[in-house]
Image 1 (cartoon, rainbow, N blue to C red):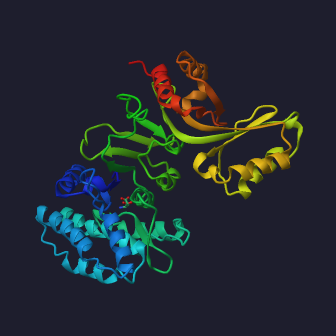
Image 2: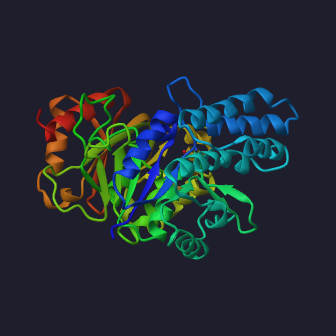
Length: 436
Ligand code: ASP
């Protein structure tokens, strides 16, 4: 039988009416056996996430201040959900226990209780088995998943237990203490469950109908993306398009389990499938994304290309200053180092003087306020003229391209433009590929 692991995000489980949508989705397909849930998220823009409230309560308890009013808000929220779902489940003892542990337990323990309580309620509503991830998911001290311990333990706990509800976001460290992933980590939990049970699909239910080809705040009504590969998604999300936690792809990638992004509020929408390899695509690009806030450190030196070790010494300067390099476009006797402006600002003077002294360059300049745009699509490699289309669309708009970097995989072309040209450039490239 087909098996589906589903993860429902914070907005999908924010209150009883949302949770009833979850129930309808789960009930509509018996293959939906493994249900991973987040803590209740925001019900409106000015609402608070339960996870944030729990962390606030923990901090307050650590400072030996009164947590009463914060816990009251948390309690009320769960009691309301339970009452609206007409559940005969007394959360009182659980809430008391959490209150008791706040001053002695870790912040991870506190943060994890949002998922724990929601998991209990949703398991009750669905008549499913509750599985506590602290018993089966092991997260090493450095925050990475302990695969050898986790996958067999999860598979054993879930097999032959019927429909199971598993709270997302946490597991335990090797000593058995509750440990969370980074924020938004229920996406990772869902992927781990999918991998452990070798699910046919990992459905990630959220409040948007998948990914769009461009940021809708920049391009009006961009086309949805129906299929994107794991690697294309990585390129798009590095550049700011975000639907899934960055680390959520790793568990499913090895087994080629597709991730299907779906909208809880509009379950019939097609959504986006994230797959190992895209079979067919109507356009040569899958999407474009971009970010502002970069600086380019440009240098030129006669016969640079013949100087053995030049790039290594250059990289060492950035490394010893703790700066991560984003891109490194190079010419014959020129190279630019692209860094994040925020991190570079504090080290600028030191780095520039080290470059001058160590590398004896002929020309050294910094261009500030660069916006990077990634045009992404695996098909680009097989399509002559993609680069020409991109460059023509920008020149038609009079936009100056400050740098170009085409990845070795030909999965993307990265362009740098001046920040004031950013929105105009994204629109120009989008329109060059998608005719409206
Ligand atoms: N509740 C956690 C957070 O707010 C984890 C999640 O929702 O994925 O980050």
